[in-house]
Image 1 (cartoon, rainbow, N blue to C red):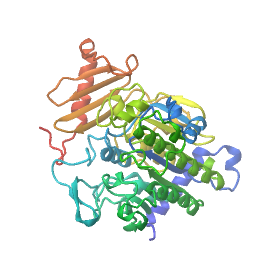
Image 2 (cartoon, rainbow, N blue to C red):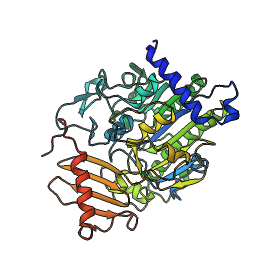
Image 3 (spheres, rainbow, N blue to C red):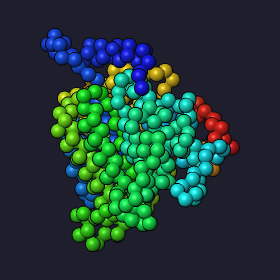
Image 4 (cartoon, rainbow, N blue to C red):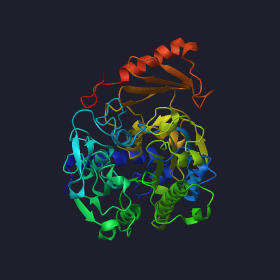
Length: 464
């Protein structure tokens, strides 16, 4: 499909801007064109802040992700878009926080589509993105990037306008639906606008592990698009339920561990292996210095004996589904050799709402007006140490509207619009053990104002 004329003009403008910003005088004197960087975003599923060696785990082996941290910058105050899957991914794709996104929980209270699985079985109700919900993939593709995704989308049901190929991706393989994504030995995957059958997995077969196919997709995508800028989004489903993995590897010898803890650890290490395959392919194709690699998790770990045994959330309070730090603070690593400082640890607070504007600035493309996020590219490259104090916001509608906001050292939580605001000092009390609202009424009033203004009512999650 040919691009509209304005796209080509935009590409030329962006390339010129990138040349001006990226070249030193000797480089600019040459005739070699400087292209915008390639962008790779790897997303784990329900991986905890404490599950990686570079974040303090002594139980799980993650040498390739740890290498990313050594060769890039590791962030200790990065946050997901939500404490659960679908809205977190919606924030990541849109640049809007969860008070403004279309999808704010995994299932809507009003509207949505009934899940239907192979054989006619029915599941829950899911909400899909619409044609009026642009994504960062669309903006990048319009700017000349090749775009691909392999893994869990979680933002659309089949036949809707929210599927990946209708929301900016040229190629896609994986799971549209998050319930389907729990089955690592599924008998089919969604592929582009159709289905890839996996007959090896029919009738209980375990011939093909789905995430192996996604890793293969990634390696092949890099090969196919090595001569032009690309955006590759890899939302792997590891280590999300169910506990399924082809083998336990080194954890087979950990006979003193609970069985599901061994399986969970093996799933995380298998994810680490995929990261290693991706890095090796970038090196083979000589794309390391022209590629920015992000690694993150979509939310905190589930509350389960295995994650408590492995200390998946570290010392943080709360787990998946909670707006306490253990539900939304995530590992975040960024590597770009020669541009992102290696071996650095940053405590700059930022969230998934910042990802879209960051990717666009790195690509030399304009950031659309109206986004909630802000580009952290200057922090990534070390040109500034901090963006300064600014508010980050989350909400999750359950029986009532649960809200959280962070402003500098302060974190506010409110479990309902008619409930008092809790206040925590994350510098003095990172485990959120002491509510200090009574001691700081002016700070509470300021953060209450953020909670009140950040939420725009949703027809799909009406607030009582």
